[in-house]
Length: 489
Image 1 (tube, rainbow, N blue to C red):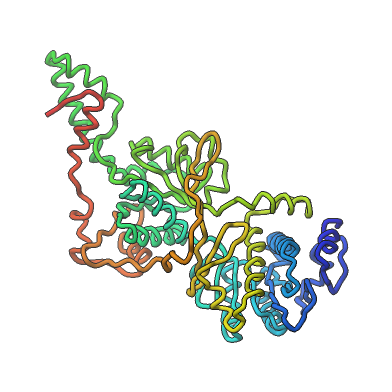
Image 2: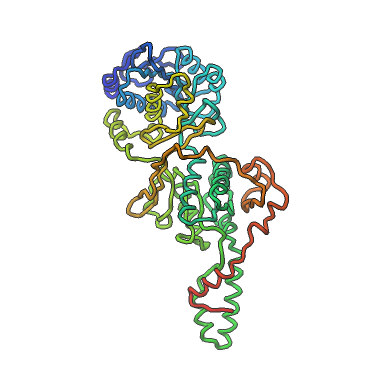
């Protein structure tokens, strides 16, 4: 394979078995794990050794190979002779990950990068913690993160907090969530109530739906308080019809104006977060519009998953917002990767590139005594995906841009150029005392939802649903009628 030969020549790869036509089998990896490693750069007394745990064989070999290639490009660009990079095959399995980390530690790795999946991260954690070797993994599962086990991936919590903080700063105060009833939906719900309390706003309603479902009519109908709003329209239409039948011409004109209206009053929120993409996202937003919740009265918000689909041609999604990592340097990487390896890189591969950038800065750190202190520096690290800092609990924070979807092409409306030294620690747990109002829940048992969101069930007057959720929207109803030229006492 000419591509592999090229990269070997570019960065001087030292491989125990020579480069040839197969990018996996000919690098010393086989179906039975062996201790052979591929080492880039030559070890010296002041070397900083990085063990990279990747699925170079097995079901995830495609991703492992892409991550490896990206890391090789990073090492070429950095050109730091102190940084020694070694690859260990996890074989896309838990047992392979355990063997790989044992080999990496036995060969004096100062830092572990990888593995890819949460189950593999969990499998190596006890050994790395015992040996005092920090890990920067690619998995974003918060369940496996802890002190010295970090992730470089984009966390749902920081995405939700970033988009909600921006929306709050632009005037949105009452949020709704439309979520799949799975771990992703639960993570978004937890993050949203934390961010809401931090920003002094409310999550008013949460609708859960069965994952895989694409018919959102029933759940959105409930979330938008449609029945109450529809009853108002029916009552007004009946009154107008009675007046019109008695010869009232103004009532007859008013009846024509309101004929297509299905609801009147407050839907209960002014922003909706939907962590879906593609046809499901379009279907969901269209259904909100059908039930009178549309832009500009309601702002639709997403997560970085929106970045994976072309949404510019969807009229209902125009003006919607989502957070994503900065792409200022990604084009150069994508072009370099394509020219070198003959294929377009996945966005996942930029994490491997940035992980090597982090390792480079750690290798050059003046403070060699405490690598974890260096990793969690408030100054953070810079890479293809902008800036990132690591927290002591393993989570992180990126300098996320806010992107607006437009028919003519997406545009950044708020860049993520932040000074990390001014940023607080990760979001605290929600304080459910002192009159806290729990969101209305649809599509899921309320007690189960409370456990998912708060880790406990809620009871007492603080969760009085009448106090928290009922509001007088009579003035809004009058305004909506007046806007149609209808004046009713």
